Amino acid sequence: MKNKAVTIKDVARLAERSIATVSQILNGHGDKFSAATVAKVEAARDELNYEPDYFAQRMIKKTSKTIGVLVPDIRNPFFGELLRGIENVLYQQNFITMLCNADLDEDKERVYLDELSRRGVDGFIIASSAVSNNAINDILRQKGHPFIVLDQKRAEGFSDSVLTDDYNGGRQAAQHLKDLGHQQVAVLIPAKPSANVQKRLSGFYSVYPRTAVHVIATPLSKVGGRQVVPEILATSVTGIFAVNDEIAFGVYLGMAEHGKRIPDDYSVIGYDDVEMCQYVAPQLTTIAQPIFELGQTTANQLLDRIANPQQPWEEHHLPVKLIERNSTAHLN
Image (cartoon, rainbow, N blue to C red; front, side, top):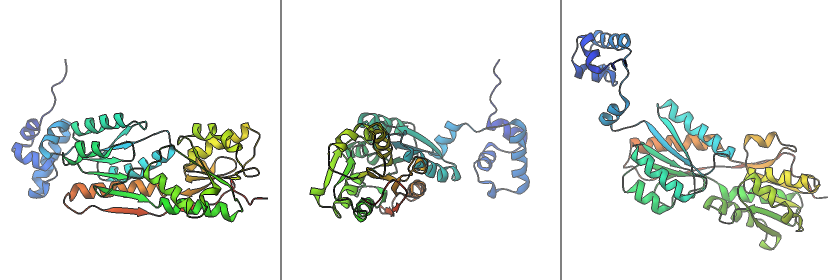
């Protein structure tokens, strides 16, 4: 037979205090009462192993202490590090992170937004460009849900956002290849790039004329990088800019399969600086984003929005920098 759950009435009875007094003390308002009363209530709670009902507390406090986080592809280590930064802040503030992986599917993300809204999460972090502005407006803005967009999704003036300097990142990548003497270069980029990736290409064009740049469409994945190698080999390029590290890792394998060496035959530069960049051979030259800090800044800004819902929208910008390793070399 299942044991009857301990209730707040049981705690009040053992502590010889009113239910209202016990409720306030157990909900963090013990400063209103004497130390003796607080000690008695806490002792009763511990003796009975009382645990508050989560759903009842949510009804009272109008908060779930959970944050919904939508990412496009959890297989990309960038998002794993981003989530570490988000969780680092939320954990310290007693919030739970609820992760939804959207697989770059707009319909799936809309379902997730609906479901997270129905479950009463306190706020949303949207790290994917697949979420349409219409979905954000219908599900989040009209219902008054606090949310923040970052990285791939531009705020366009309707929410808080945290962004990195993608234009400057693309410019730095191009300048590095140009300084190494590469005259013909390839940029590996999705067919429908998100706003932040488009800025990387724009920054790249600020250094190289368009006639010197072979833009080759491929998915943001290792598979994408590997499968596009034959198209690269059919050009006269000697330098390659992959708009994320995952594509660059795929290029490594594709080049090896075709008997090509990096950087002897092709210089390759990535973007993000995920941990694996240091463990491939040769180590990958890349544009480093402060990924962990990006997650932390996003979480802090969302919590600030939850606490101060009427404050003006804010947009934070974080810098990027070139990390030169062994995958790029002077053109012989």
